[in-house]
Amino acid sequence: MSTRRTRPVSQSPSVLDTRERILDAAARLFTAHGFAGTSIRMITGDAGVPVALVNYHFGSKRGLMEAVMERALGRHGGTRLNYLEKLERDAGEDKPVPVKTLVETFLSSALRLTRRDDLSGTVFKQLVARAFYEPGADASFFPTEYAETIERYVQAFRRALPHLNETDVVWRVYFMVGLVAYVIAGKDTMRITQQYGLDGQLTDDPAQVLDRLVPFLVAGFAAPPP
Amino acid sequence: MSTRRTRPVSQSPSVLDTRERILDAAARLFTAHGFAGTSIRMITGDAGVPVALVNYHFGSKRGLMEAVMERALGRHGGTRLNYLEKLERDAGEDKPVPVKTLVETFLSSALRLTRRDDLSGTVFKQLVARAFYEPGADASFFPTEYAETIERYVQAFRRALPHLNETDVVWRVYFMVGLVAYVIAGKDTMRITQQYGLDGQLTDDPAQVLDRLVPFLVAGFAAPPP
DNA sequence: GTCTATAAACGGATAGAC
DNA sequence: GTCTATCCGTTTATAGAC
Image 1 (tube, chains in turn yellow, cyan, purple, orange):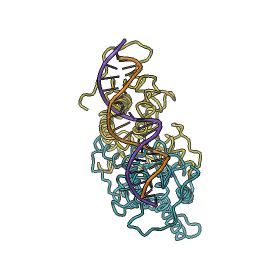
Image 2 (cartoon, each protein chain N blue to C red; image 1 turned 120 degrees about the horizontal axis):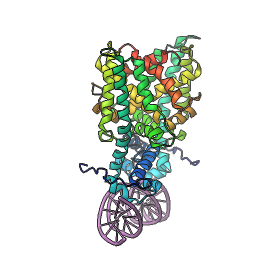
Image 3 (tube, chains in turn yellow, green, purple, brown; image 1 turned 180 degrees about the horizontal axis):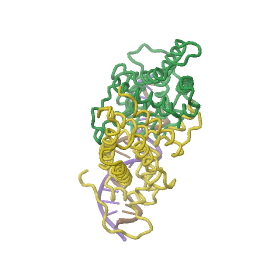
Image 4 (tube, protein in one colour; image 1 turned 90 degrees about the vertical axis):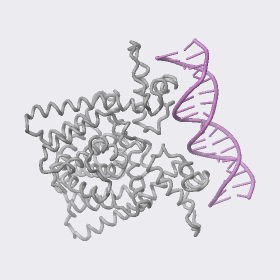
């Protein structure tokens, strides 16, 4: 586990890197069937490469999962953090960014939709959300960028909610992260829930979800301490 | 799948039914490692019975999972529904049960803790929550009692929140269910989150979780429509 | 109903040719 | 870097004795 293989330097100008093809297929399949439910053979079959390449490039199935997570969270975690820092600069010295803005920023960067079938879009978000629930998931699944982002948000919410102590804020950020993960992971979930009672017009259109979620979370944050 | 085996009639007064022992072990292990991550041999090994009995009693691994879900949700769904009906009778004819009471009732019945290692306690709750995120989970995992319970709660919340339309209420119940599932399933999740920024004193003591969650959810329900 | 033994397929990982 | 062939343990499921 200490001998994590790094990306080879030679940037071959081939049609599409084999390594990338594996990562794409893995992200898709881990998202759809979970880690334990996806076999290396499913992945390599989907990517159209021989089985051995997974172990060559990533050392093991778990190494592949970590690489997938790193690419996904690394890419977007940075962006998210940049948004937040810009917001805080714009607000000025000691003026806190309002709760509603913080919630909207967190949600929109989490739910943002690019192209449907693109890895950087929907699939990747579900993958991240899924990772929260993977039975075997532990800290090594999550790259450090993610930790920093959460930590920064906690600080921002503390400034915006001076009547709450740190523990209160931490809990509520925890609730927000969880609910977002739930909603994003909820492709199957939503279908289930729909079928079993919640048969209103639930949709998984991100814009609508965001509209619904923002007032709910903002009110939750603003609630009096327990 | 149409030939689902029913419980044999002979109620042997043995120490503990083999069938029940399998169900107990399965619930524990599915909860801990997920469906795909749990093998029949782990289950039978844990239960101290030969492998063949799973297929004899439940037909297949999936049949076992469905039986586990049915027992878990059936038992407690009924109880939860009874509470709600009692609340509504006590409130009187047209007086709605207050939002806070509804949230507390839903949460406390969902988070209630009996004995730690008992199936009807913590383990089973996590199992249910886990089922929301199982990649392969679909409607057949959930018995019908569950649907009725959710449907009844939606109606109760509608009466308590006349300024919201049905769609708004359905979304918010959906959020509540999701957040509860997240918190309950979050044994690993919480550890991860802790490790990565949310390093306040998060605890999984159900009473504390409930204290934190109630005001958050009540405020969310009471929020203005989007 | 319970158990042993075994079937038949699939799992991750690797050796070694190219 | 890529690929084939293979090792070897584990998987679900079943056949058939008790």
